[in-house]
Image 1 (cartoon, helix red, strand yellow):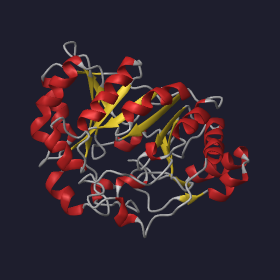
Image 2: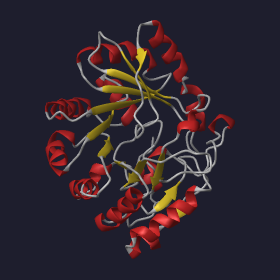
Image 3: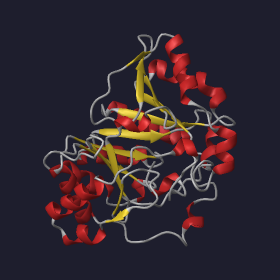
Length: 325
């Protein structure tokens, strides 16, 4: 079992398959991916290399793989990546996080490849506001894709970053949507990165404010699975959907950390906000998953107790597209 010096066990790997994104979200890449080209490293992990990574983590007790980006659907071989991860012994669940712009045309093939869970980013249910936040007029396309995923009985989560100046005032619209839509709607506290300091200062909303409102309105906390993400999830008998809150600035947020990250270029990131990753590309390319597993085990011993976001520390994270959040 993969365990750090604080006793935390890691059942969950977030595997980035590209750092490229085609959206221009105002809290992440407001000028688009092109402005990152001079900093970007080409040559993302191949399907074979991704398979070696997943085998290494599976041998260490990891049970859940989430394919992230950037935007993973920009990989033409995404279905093959899903199929490869799903085929590895010990992996119980394969999920992806996507902005959803290809969802209606691709979700059937992803399910056929073995997809178990879908996360889609929707920061507003108002088409004009959605376009203002993301730079794209794709809301209705994404909602059609979610409808199709639900028809296929794929458990679906919807991510919305809380933004004081952009979508906080439409919280009730989100609530009405999940009254009859069986998704888990996760509100994520805006996180400070190297590129968004001023935007963070004017838009950060404490998730605890939302939590207090939910508890007052009769929502109850749902027990968390051991390979679940960091969200505190709430249910209500009058709603088909659930609400999750991801609150990285809350007390003891890191105490239950169960996930690690591999970048699209094969670096192990012990935390989203670590100063730098541990370059494992050579070991990955060698194809020996047991030797790679030993390097991972050694690196995890150095994982810090906390991300230190509350002290303004952002590490080497310029923007969230680097590692898929």
